[in-house]
Image 1 (cartoon, rainbow, N blue to C red):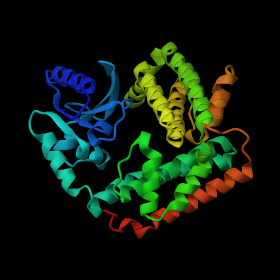
Image 2 (image 1 turned 180 degrees about the vertical axis):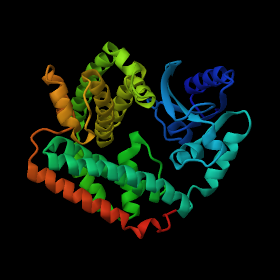
Image 3 (image 1 turned 30 degrees about the vertical axis):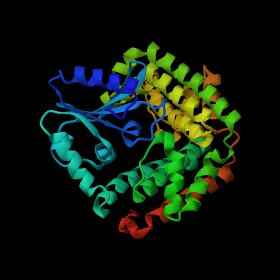
Length: 367
């Protein structure tokens, strides 16, 4: 931990010291921006926790000594058997602080050795292809059903997943606060600037300036505050949700998470990284409303059609139309024309087909 700022180092030392006493903890490692060396003072710290007797990954946000820390718990079985590609980057970046049985070190060594191999890259890409297909399918279905706002939203999310495929091909780190920078560098490296430029146009990120970023941040605060109020008011409904949905809601609407996210966005704006800031805002807002819709459906005792997410929220928020309006303003979903949304969906389909055709995922990654 000697390369870390003193406040971060001391905070992590306290956490590691306490967690080592937990008999279910088998390993702890630092990953993310503080491990890669591209962190800023506003960056949160990410700890990978190898935990026994859990079935799936989950994250908790805490504040320790003024430092925002994400505790990323993963099942011990994930590093004892076939390592899922979803944690490749975390393992490669990990600075190991505690490793009871050397399982974490062995998994890190294995993945580091095969990380850039064509076979491993294809495995990681496959997951992103599935995600992009899911969101594009939602976009196409929403367009067919007349929900233009959902169609536009899911089209841009599908494009974002496509850009992550480029990052995997270019062997670039995937980071929410450096997303635009890494996407642009990957697109240039792979001569796929048209995909990147289309994404900027579809998301209106090419219009990002200081005034817009600050306006979006204020809207985000309002939206998250309103949703957090509903989460607190309906804690019983939260507890009745599927375990994964429950943990996600508790994470994203934890005051410590919201405070840390706002702090990070303010730092991006102050650094004049305006497209990064607006992307961060809209990405977080999209995740937040997806999680919120699950809770809202539970409260209303109604079925949630994910393809018509925005229409569902419009109906669910009839008593609070201002909240719904804030959401659509935040995500730039107002004043949409059917012809334009239809063209966007069509272009996204072409882009996804094009990126699939880049070597049919058999092309050797650029190293």
